[in-house]
Length: 334
Image 1 (cartoon, rainbow, N blue to C red):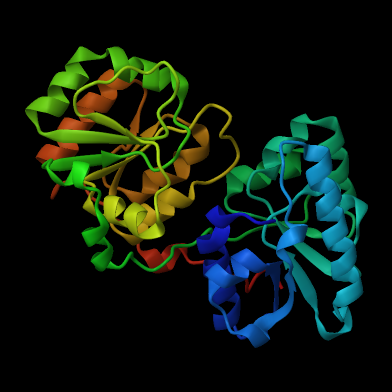
Image 2 (cartoon, rainbow, N blue to C red):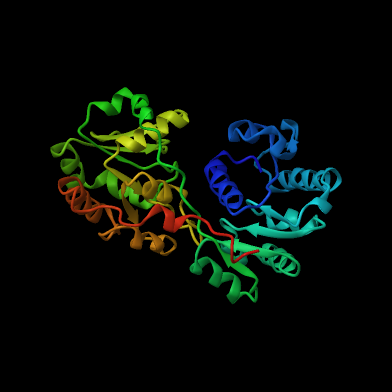
């Protein structure tokens, strides 16, 4: 799958496998391979760009996934390898095209798919000969509850800290403010966004403390509020990292459909020692142990309260987890 948002994750897990002494070869779309910047001889096959067609039709997309899997079967000398790790799992296409080798299927959001009869069927079918990899006990329990026991927990892991030279890429409209609160995800919970728009106490707090609250992709119907901005254009990697590093607080308010998953941004926060505030979500409970304060809030009023504390007392509230503790370890998997 051509998913640029998974590049950091792929780097983390490739490095973890290599550091454990495994001989790793890659298959991935050409545009991803170009961004990965790995040695050319590390690739078993680079999927040509024309094959990574993507549209709004799940049926058509899966037809291309199936075509790619069929060509992987043809082009790959599987006898050279012990296992195949899929860094992201589409249970339907993988259930229809089996690879002639033991598969370990990394599940980012698949635990939420047991509510679909079709996807549940294919997940259980895949479980006969393959193993699943998830990121925490909560995700694993969903598989166990559905009769699948061959599930391994491997930490998501952290990338190295962002290069501080990216601070020079900070957009000008943000550089004039004393404090920045950044919501990196392009899809915040609509109910919270609506609450923020009408919460005058929060608006006054932002102005009084010279805080700019930064969202991405302004939703239709949202009115302009002082000290709340939306970045509607594409952010380069350098710009994203510049805003991230300059921010005093990273805000994550995922929609209710974010279930049985983890946030890559939460691990970026650990790597860069950034304070975080999280809209209440059971799937993010793992973040609680990362900080010496309670990072969760329920509404705009609680968000306001916690922003005042974090901005006013930054040295008293901070990340406490060691990055090395969160690195992926495959020793107990194979």
